[in-house]
Structure formats: structure tokens, C-alpha cells
Amino acid sequence: MSFYLYLVLGFLGGIPAGMGMGGGTVTIPLLVLVGGVEQKIAQCANLFSFLPMSVGALKMHADNGLLDTQGIWWVIVPALLLSAIGATLASVLPSDILRRAFGAFLIGLSCFGFYRTLQEKKA
Image (cartoon, rainbow, N blue to C red):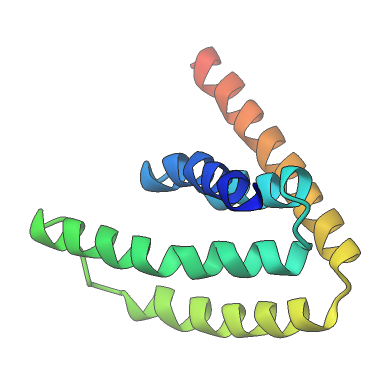
């Protein structure tokens, strides 16, 4: 039964990820809250699933001529550095703290999206 549950959860998380809408914001809560997976494992699974999706998206953007590589190192270097710091931090923090931090992140992201929507409607 758990195989089918995880298959459905992967499908539900993969839809927004495939549309470029941040599948991790859906996949991680689904795995933790519905699948009963530990926070660290859910985050690891999300990051692992991101690898083939990002390769596919990069190829699609390259084929459509949508890549602008000017100034790319200003994005790559901080991203790699901060990813290493974040991974190291996540490996030493308890899952409970990671779960709360991710929840706070999702609440902040929701508030930001709500605020932007209100600003666009005023304009």
C-alpha cells in the first residue's frame, strides 16, 4: 500500500514541479504530513527529484534559445556556496527544527504572494 501512496504523492508533487511552480513547496509537506516521512528524508527526496527535472528544463530552454549566460557566474557561485552551507546546516539540525523552519518559510512565501497580489490589483 505504501508504494501506491508514495506514487500518488509523487504525482501530486510532480505536477506543480513540472509546471515550474516550485514542486518542493507541495512535495515536502505531502511527504511529511500524508506520507509520514521524516523531514530530512522528504527534503532529500525533493532535491534528488529536482536533478532530472532541472536537466530537462535546461535542455528545453536551450533548444528554444531562452538561455542568457551573461553574468551567470554571479548566480552560480553564491548558489553553490549557499547550497553547501544549507546542506551542512540541515545535516546537523533535528528534523523538528527543519519542519518548523520550512513551515515558517511557507507562511512567509504565502504572505509575500498575497501582498504582491494586492499590490497588482491596486495598480
